[in-house]
Image 1 (tube, rainbow, N blue to C red):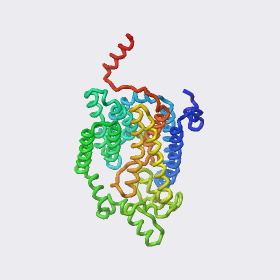
Image 2: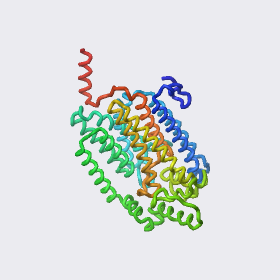
Image 3: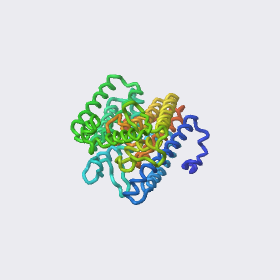
Length: 416
């Protein structure tokens, strides 16, 4: 492989890419750059107090971005059928690691959830890293659904079920819901019968209700969403801060603008408070550099900044759908659809939580929030859809079969 292709700015092959691939590449880089700028602002106060270095989290994020960009450039230059050929091994690997996080002493616990495995100073979050491989394997399965035996179908549906149950047990309801919806929409795009899709959707809703009923902290979050003042210093803290800040702005006659009538007042000025001038990041919001980073962004860049970011996400979604429509092979088309749902869906869920439209939950904003696992997964997902755009006319695909059938067909081919 040409080493110049592993660099970000000196890849001489970009000019030969399809237009959609080039546009999506630059859009991804713009998204990444804005996210880094925002992380610098959101993380500086907390890093300065806790680590005595305001750039502590920003510098660590830069290292993860470097790793993510290497993965990004490898994927955009690697034929998609080769990536599909090994995707199932990564699903099995990260599924195993998800259950390892549940083992006392092996899983690293934070905020009452065990989602990480500490390898020295490097935290591994398998529920984040598995996302792009879930898209790949779902596309392989549902894109070849009619050609597969029920044995293979049940095997991989069982694997997907274990992935969702493992993430839910950590517990991580938001990531479980995101992964489940991504798999479901890929199946819908593949044209699976509605009776299967309807039953699966009903089962997912019942599982979510059961989890909320059993998990005390999840139930408290839902109740605090309905009535945040019932626990103003606990689970309703973020929503109460929203109301208090709104009343303070109103009393001081600071011009406000709501994004929706009853959602959130972060867009209190059309142009925001200005870069670096957020008040909420001064320890009014917990984990403002990850789960609530959009709150800081909206406060600093206002209504206009929020709309621009939403337009960027909408443009990403549009390009993703165009790429999917142009892809001639069904598996490649489903990969493009899955990545689009994953990136756009996660962004909208994060914004919905931050604006108070959804109950509080920990879901990072892709390429904005602090965290190396999320950064690598986001950049790899973007690379996959760019790769689909580059080879949308290819028809080759790796079938999903049992190993015995693979060997039998290989022998038949050699005899010919």
